Length: 435
Picture (tube, one colour):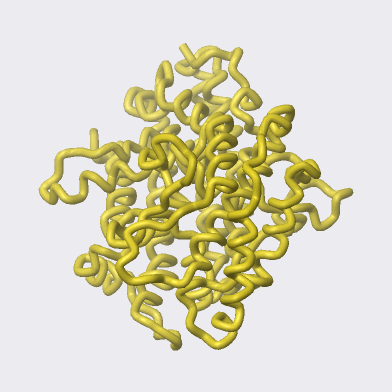
């Protein structure tokens, strides 16, 4: 029997036309929170990265400290007014999370510092809003992609061409395009979400008509994943790797984004602050990608392996769920427990095997392509200072990653383990490995 037909996508804050993205831009915050709005509006103009020692950045240091000092002097605003509309809670999370990252990363580094304080006027309301939304009190993929846009033409429907990314740390079009590509990938994935939802509402998944439909849907899903891969690759002409690595990426890093040797973030006035999830945004927080994994029964849980060091990071994908809005995470938990999985059906019905394996291979190729993008944007750029190197073959990237185990993604993961683990766990789902 299929999952309950009484459950709908709307129960998980998912729209059949826009998927994980809201159908309209988030509303502005009430005037009660004007200080948050003004500080965010001023931030990209008056702040620079604390680690940037260029003349332009140093010239902003005074204004940066005044901006931070002003925040420290704020009262702690009550969030009750926001609870009347979940869209206001989302907007508050986006504002406060961006402000936290602006605040922390505009502070010049000081050697030997064990911790850095997020002041209570930011930390306390962010923790409360995050609790209500069921997500981490830090900048997330939802803040930078799902909720970070406005219409170019408000009279036209939402599309990749009709979105303008609103908040960017670096002020560069490269950063805007980086997020826009992720948003376009999400929009292409809406059809995949509908396919998954259709399967979960089949009255009898094993009937001949259901098998025929599922076979066709798996073929469609393969094409959708291939399109998503093409969109992901389209970032390369519009976002310069050097700009990304040195001007954009540092703003994204969370408390553990650069490893345990960096200062810990302490949320002033927040109980049990040491237990907070503070890794920062990552593409691994895309609920759409997680839904594809769940639908195709790709298992990223830790498993026994010859290289035992791979096990902790294979759990990265599950950890990233804690950074999603709670209702999106609930959707994945719903998908995790089907009455019958697509993979089980494909094992039982030979007619489905080729189409199932084709979808899994498309997902595996997507991860292969992502590794190439990582090669260009992170691995290669980690070798540079102010010049752009030549491209590197993927094989060279893998070899370097084997020796540079400390290179981390913005979500706090060690890239060498994560990328190989997610790729390999996807490949293991192939039926040809099981028959």
